[in-house]
Length: 115
Length: 109
Image (tube, helix red, strand yellow):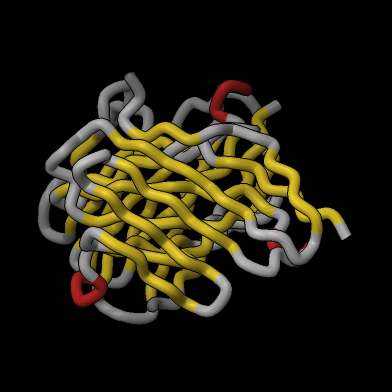
């Protein structure tokens, strides 16, 4: 498995502001993923972040709203831009450790409340 | 049709019983299958993975895969109150992981 940390663990933000979430892994991984989990719902993939290339976004998610950086093989950031109350959610990063056959391990999550 | 379907529950079993959680998926080309446990307020935790037809056992957990029927299940033997959580079924194809909505399990003492 992998040790994954996220910062911040939680935040309360005002409408119209932006928040950048960091994800750090203790080993080099090729693929990192960002998910959103709204209250009482399952996980929805926002985008896949590959080192050295632009992130690949899922339908319904756009780079202007959720810009992602992946500067190296152990780190990624997700920014939630121009926030509205509908962005209140848990944001999770996960990593794919290839040797574990496409198994994904999750970070502890960032709990975001937008007022 | 949803890509990954689970009964949302809640599923309630008495302590010591077998809990049976089921999942169906729509893409026949799916390659790997996972069960995650998620406690309230926590992130998903991997408990089982299975890649080929049949059963795979790990302690009190048994995962069953039937690719012909596009069906994955998780059995929890000797259920404990600490097993009370939401169980997410996940199906992966070419690094595209899709999650079910989860089944909420309650184990009553």
